[in-house]
Length: 250
Image 1 (tube, rainbow, N blue to C red):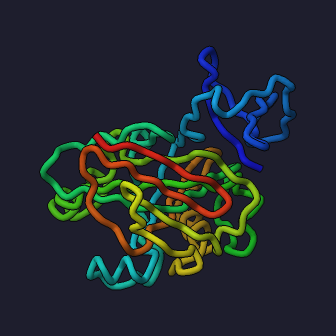
Image 2 (cartoon, helix red, strand yellow):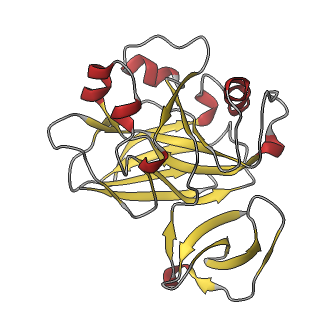
Image 3 (spheres, rainbow, N blue to C red):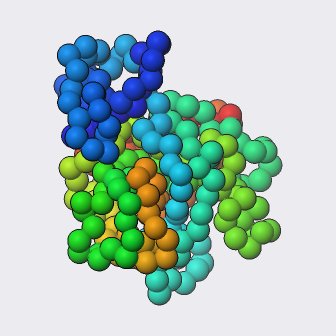
């Protein structure tokens, strides 16, 4: 099931996408809900970020090739860091570079959306705590990342965490094709089965440290092929079964 958060020009609401139409829901996406009858064509609505998390947790160096191109060792346990939730933006929105001189990179990622409060989960028994998955771009200022020696400032500028276009609730997250195009040229092409730590590993590790809450988002790392963004770029990220997230760089 694909869940969208959207505007019809008058209101903002959640809906379920079927056959290029969106059906608004009655209820809470994290609990039981019903579909309303007043459906619309996708062309009639504006897709918004499908989630506004309280916590935005990220995993670094979770694909072997990315660790290699970054000239860093593969971590022995998930390398996690926090980013500001205010960095989140949606499909077809602009990524506003914090400056035009620093190397600022794209990073295609699978994002996990937490369904309900969770603590100390087992890696084989996490699925009831996950609402679904979406595409994400972990935009990163490499100069500031190196200067600071940590990730928060480099990755937390407003618009630096595009997510969307939908939340897909029925997926095997550990076997999905993940791709990124820059101005139509394929730059990242991998599969989540190459992740060093699986989705279950990540959720077990993170929930052993902090309580996960409804709507929290975890970004799971990027494959090899990262590169610099520049003003005027179009970036498309596609994860198998979810859809394509498009953003424009300013």
